[in-house]
Length: 345
Image 1 (cartoon, rainbow, N blue to C red):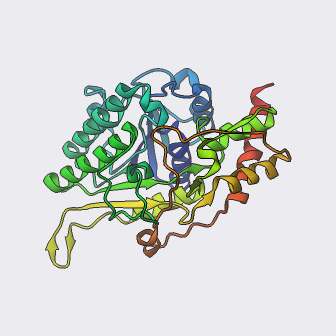
Image 2: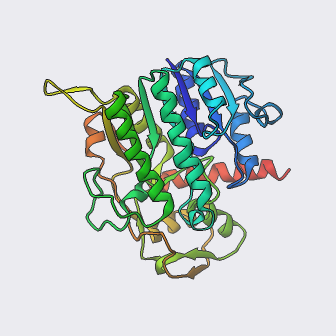
Image 3: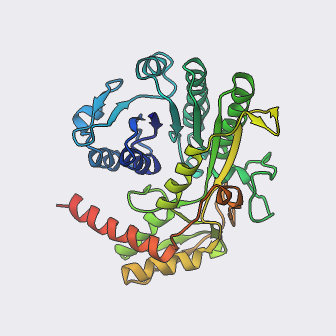
């Protein structure tokens, strides 16, 4: 099967490329390699995939991996209405997994235009390509942030998500609405993936695990928001990839109970249990062998006190979260130490 993975230089996209190549799929990775966080980490991920910076940094240039014969990569913006359709026409994809987006809840307060350009205009362009080139299944990254201040737990895909509290969340909710419309009008099977606080090796530097590990390692204080009264459904990257694989193999049906139906689905992919921020920090301290100096602060705008995924629908398809935070954080810290020791040489 030939698969387009957008956001291939990103955290989840990088891991998904590796997994699908291991399963002998033909993969084309796409990323615009923006500078939201350090681009050298993105190029380092691509290097792990056999794609080197000298070629990867050129826009609209499809290059072959030097080590993975089934992988190609192209640097491209999703909102490019000329080159994205050309890529679809040329490569004849079977499935698309859209993990490209302008990420970050807090950054959306500072640079809203970047979110509209990438997450809405870019997503519409992708939907049009899926429509015109007969894609068999579109999977796309949504987010647990769409649940906003939902107080009912665990969060279910049947819950109302009509009151997002950040522009980032609003763009993800918009993606779900746009996907439903295209599924309904053009019979394109689509699945929205609501990810819950993903962490692990090669993770994003703007996320709490990365920030805390760096600060504690350097003897600097960490910022603990809402005075530590927070919990998250922390989900290790291997569990996320396992969840995507399961959904990938089970596209939504166009026929249900002998009646035509819209081939559209939403799935939570999480650990299925919340962990307190305090326990999360203790696991980092244990892995580093150092205690953190903590600076307690109020809740930040756009943030929420708790997330908790109802993963029962995914479990019915065979999903099981298997990595606890102590194990996952230890793996991240080991990677962090190895990566930055190499980078600092």
